[in-house]
Length: 121
Image 1 (tube, helix red, strand yellow):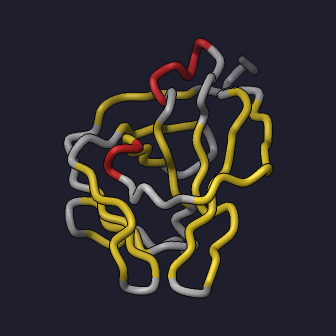
Image 2: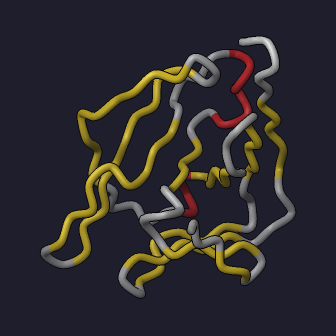
């Protein structure tokens, strides 16, 4: 890991709800919070707490601090929200705490944590 770059992963005692176009697509009382140097906190949610009809995509990226990320899309009616969810199925050992969990782009969904809006400005 780069000097000065730090990742902290811990269970969060929080209720996280994700909505898209007014529809709840994820809701969890079991999130994991990831804090990373220079980035806003991210909440990773167990897949069981996310709608099961996510569409896998072929999009992948690699993060030197977490490993290879896979992406999923959400379809609501006729509209598809591409690559709106990501997760690390086999992260590097330092990020093992997010294995198999999913995270949503907070600027592309309506996210609340403990009922407080997490909108990104």
